[in-house]
Length: 160
Image (cartoon, rainbow, N blue to C red; front, side, top):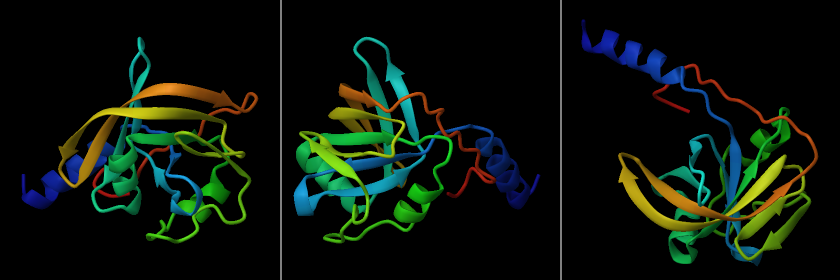
């Protein structure tokens, strides 16, 4: 098998792993920002923990590292508007929530459109290639009715 064939097989195999898509928010006021994330997973029942993977160098990474807190806004079945809003990302100081209905809590920003939110406190982190994986305890939750979650299947497991 050639290197190209191996890469193609790996891309197809990794793409079979389903994920949700969420908006991670961190910070407060003008320093708050958010990003679209697809590598999120529950990690523990008792106490409830989640893992979140953030590409190294993203502006939100510094805020999470400084505060050890973030909000995971879980997207419902129709995430198109949030994909459009958060898909390109935001640079430092850019207004991430302009035009959106939000509220702040001590962990970050909750989006009114989210199916639910998990406010989290980072317990540890690990470098994982070009990403950092945060392991966080769920400290507070919010749900918005009976929205079904969005489930994401990638075409290639080697890129977003």
